[in-house]
Image (cartoon, rainbow, N blue to C red; front, side, top):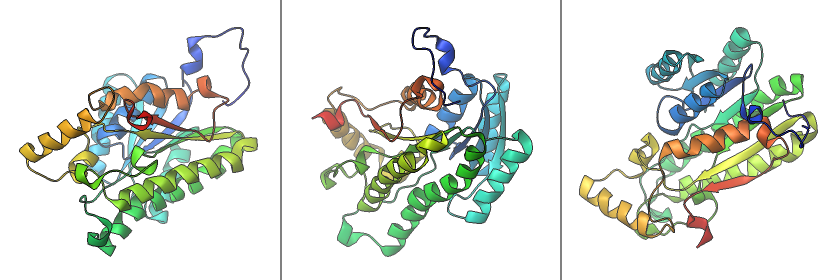
Length: 275
């Protein structure tokens, strides 16, 4: 729970999530699968939610194989009825909700603004912005009942500043959606801090190998290789990130170890935003 702790008695138990229940959206692949498995390893029961139910089932099966507790659930985060059904399944099966990870997200081709279709703009906003709003809105009453909860939203370094179109990495619809996630996270943190609920955002840099990366960079292997080289050379650490490297930060934000942290946006980017 989000309670003050005795700072003179630090223990790694503060990172444990035993007895807590987490929902991870977009848990069927990529970062979502990493997050779901990390939370389960720390002791949480995890609802693996994804629009691709079969992928969510694979993630849940991996957790169960490792003696964790998980179940899969279909969700379309842009559909309020689907989101409400997700919350109903969670409360039916686990009677509580302690952690919400708004991870589900999509991208479109990397076109400049005047070349971007209205359909692509609306499609990305529906999942990346509306989806975070709907899931958070539905989860908050469940957390308020217990006067405790941690909401972790996935933003992006693209939501913290412009990305050169020469990198052919993201489009303005994606950047705008992630900027909205940053602002929404901070507003939720302020509105619900006295209700015992914390809300923080992770802004990943270039973590390749996820489904989102394949959507954002639909090109040949040779062309993709050149883009990756440019991303690496533009990152102070000289490389892109591995999705697994985000697991520790996610567990930290979900746990009592971060009990006095809310409204923060943590860039996990190999130094990209420090240039």
